Amino acid sequence: MEIFLDCLPCVLRQTLEASRLATDDLDLQRKIMEDSIEIISHYKDYECSPDLCRTIHKMVKSRTENKDPYAHIKSRDIKSAKQLLPYLKDFLKEKENSLYWALKIAATGNIIDSAVNNNANMTEYVSGELKKEFLVCDVKLLENKLRTAKNILIIADNAGETVFDQILAERLLPRNITYAVRSNPILNDATVKDAYDSGLDDYAKIISTGCDAPGTILKDCTDEFLNIFKNADIVISKGQGNFETLSECGRPIFFLLKAKCPLISKRLEVSLNEYVFMYK
Image 1 (cartoon, rainbow, N blue to C red):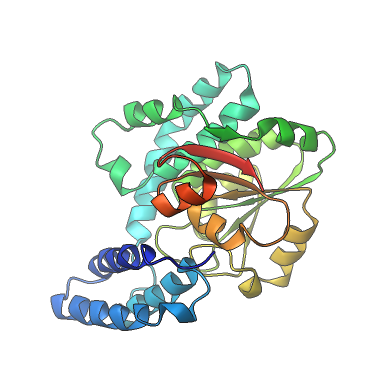
Image 2 (tube, one colour):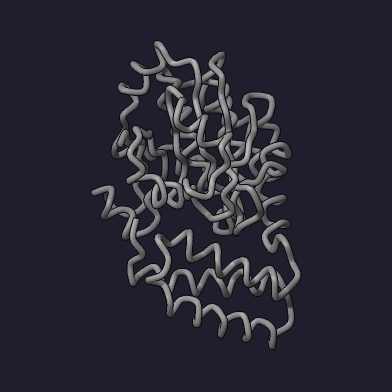
């Protein structure tokens, strides 16, 4: 997916956030911003926004010598999400179409970020989001495929939602489930460590994609991941970064996300902040 002009100020804002998380040195933050502006000026050299983000965040980590600026945020998000697990399980028990609502829980996990953690009542906030049904939902197609599927690949997004993804993974058992995460820390995206910390290994085999961008750039992925990606009966891709990098990859994928970006929502032909489970 190409880089749009609207992506550039968003990347710059994200860089400022990362620099402040990585260091308290104001002069160093200024230098990081200057370097990021130089990198962004060459945005046409990058194939997608996650590719551009990767270069900038590698620079941030190199200049600050902080390998994981978002580490404490990811730890906090996983802890917060774990506290919601009993509520989420009870919520699912009350629903007739458990697959639909397991998907919705997994999609809702994407809001477990800084905005949610500033909310005084997380349960109330998540409850409100769970009430919002999918605008687009190809669950019937998934149900048909599950009748014969043996191997399922879930491509992860943020660290906090790995806890929410346990609900979906458990619903998909006893099929073989592989859960793929980023190869190295980038933003608040899930790594192997984060997925294990959340307890997701009780439901799925956890692997790294081999890609350290906030998305899944296939040419950078490991042979192990590519083999699973190619041969999985079902692939479920979570979040906007994975949609940006995989929406034109050529294989059938279920995309599960909340359209939080105007450009993504336009590409999906939905309104901003709508939930989508789309087969493409």
